[in-house]
Image 1 (cartoon, rainbow, N blue to C red):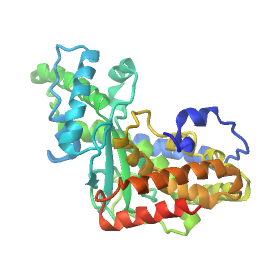
Image 2 (image 1 turned 90 degrees about the horizontal axis):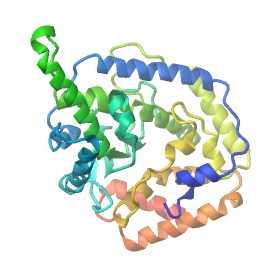
Image 3 (image 1 turned 180 degrees about the vertical axis):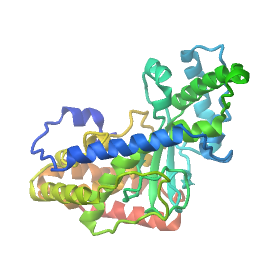
Length: 368
């Protein structure tokens, strides 16, 4: 995205990496959180929990019949045509729809959520072969800073709240759901013999969509811990926990956060290498996590992408030891913030409190 090179995947890949320091407990944390992620996925995929018919993903899937007679590529074309309709119908943000801000369908707790409906290229063969592990809903930002790792089911669980941003790859979700339906059709044929329960879209949503969001939940949680510690914000512990055992390596997380902050506050790093020094679990580091999706950047969607990175821009400015090293990034951000203010693109989208907070942050950027 123009003016946001720091979050551009191609730019990040071409920028030299320097001054990298690995926290002492990184390998241990990766083992523990991979174990936790697998335990959470297995628990929900081995049991037949279901969301309600009113869940936003369930409502989307109502619009996708299986159409077995279509090959996969024709079905993707069909889903692309549906994407335009769904963005308008559900008021999602897309390359042709400005959209609205939604209630906390995923992260609950009176959150407001920007939901981008889009199409990002994916490996079709890999998806059809491994659809149970595929990720079709991506978290671009959330606010949780606890290690209980609750599923983003939209419940008011006491987690930290705020503005969240998500992207739904509609064609990928549709193909994934179609493969699920093919499996259920096969089960239905043999149901009389083996007693296999035939599942529906509400089971699919929790088993294979929401449970597969955990990688993003975990990586953003660790990044949030680093940011919140820098600003002196306390961890907000949810009211609930999983019904099964997961590891919460509190001591190691605290040491990881302290060591990470020590590096990025004491060394004269540019913004890109600050992100490279915030090491994560499933993404290599924060630069990979915060890279914006490869989607059409029309005026309708630019505001949503910008807002999804607003807090990280301010954090990078605040945490950087040497501002002059990053002057070219800062000047770009100022231009973009002034353009968004001038075009009045954000007026009337958010609640009063969130809009006020965003405008204050935009002003901060213009004054950097």
